[in-house]
Amino acid sequence: MKPIKTLAILIALAAAPAAFAGSMDGMDMKGMDMKPSVESKQAPHPVAAEIKKIDPQAGKVTLKHDPIENLGMTAMTMAFPVKDRTSLKNFKEGESVSVTFDKVDGKPTVVDMQRK
Image (cartoon, rainbow, N blue to C red; front, side, top):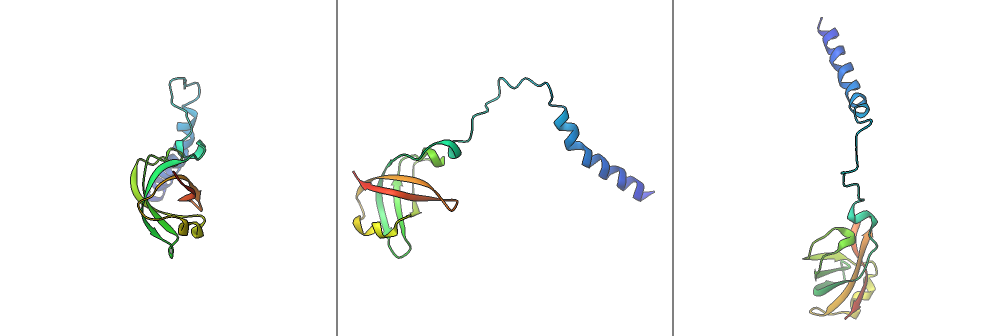
């Protein structure tokens, strides 16, 4: 008798997603917020930042930055990899910069940095 009960439970669980999906037919979705995620659709643009630390060997820079809208990040201080690590030699700690961030290999990365 146990195998029959187990089979019945498995069939019920397998059918549940299809039953739920079908129950949404005809629903009014007008009030739903259907905007795409911030991170996936906004183009990168320059963000004001201050260089706190430069690590040329690791190819990283620690920045105190304003919100990064295209990555959905609030203002904070954080270390980021730099796409062109050789460019780090052109900067020094304490400088105010304008930084463009984007995801490179799935990680938030500095793709451009200019002095203000």
